[in-house]
Image (cartoon, rainbow, N blue to C red):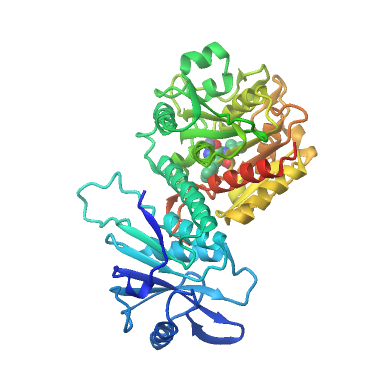
Length: 503
Ligand code: BES
Ligand code: MN
Ligand code: ZN
């Protein structure tokens, strides 16, 4: 993690490589404005404005313009980032987070960055800091001696604000940075090639991450899974030379306000199994442990932030491969707790590993269960690659997730679980089939999971299939590849739920 500092020094005089400023317009007037950050002098802001106007800069959100330093600025370059129209109502923390993230994502060659953007509240300073850190993420572990020049992470980031020594501001920034660090962790797990991160390595990475935190971590290996009769995880894992794992984390602070179970899908590679995927569809399937990465990283952040909630977390990890030992379409497996499932399509494997983990999570008698999974291609058809689906059996939890996501800037949208689709999951020989109606596939998958939730426990299911992995160009603070989506919303949800202390 690169250091991020808050400073109340004059940004114009901080002799660093890059000075990042914002540029806006106001209402119908399209004059470019460098908004007052209470740090840069009016003279310098006016000089930057005319320089930006001269080169035809734009204030469109996330638009970047590089200009030489104006008189009085010691940085080698000024990078202006569009903040959109100041008078619009979506002008808030997420706008700042995305703008600064976009600016930092773009900068290469190890720059030292000074950021001078307007912030009215501690939350807005924290959003700037978090955007910078999220945008500073680089994944370079697997670069060799090739010719493509990797993007070098910034050497240092300084956020200037007159409130640099204000207690609330410092605390908000510390929280935002802790969360960002764990988003990096989740992104690293998702970006790791599937040959470098089998279920075993995912469990080991979790165990080393909890070392300095008040989290108990236990891992069930293939033998323990057999002993415990975790038929769903074993069934999916049986085709692979790399055996499955069930990771359990427990953060149990003194006097918790609430007990929340987090459950994540951890398929380290999804080939589809014998219901093999076509090659194109397999290219990104290292991302199929994105739900596990999110719940693990969120749990780390929650413990590090000492949020007063008990959190028990399960990551159901397996590699879905075709082989002579793989499960076959038509096989029936017995999940943890005894329900039987006819596996008609081995590519609908996420719900099989989650079935075991959800039943196990229910045994801890949490107040809420939240599961996170790259569960269905249908999610992407319905909501695209940036908006995750929220389903569940309780309107309050669904709303709480949605509200948390509005705070963090992640996009989650409620979807229904229509009763009439449930019967498409009936099996002639087992309790349940693992596929049903193709239409509404995201909802059918949600209805399948619901069968494994204890009656009366409020539950939300987050389908992050699209948003977990950015197949396109970077945008805002979101790089290409693993995004770490859901980490921030989960932390926010747990914090809000502990605060409101409804139970
Ligand atoms: N991991 C996939 C879902 C997925 C697709 C995630 C694209 C990210 C991007 C999941 O295991 C899967 O294969 N689902 C099937 C279910 C179907 C067989 C009922 C799907 O969506 O096609
Ligand atoms: Mn699959
Ligand atoms: Zn999958």
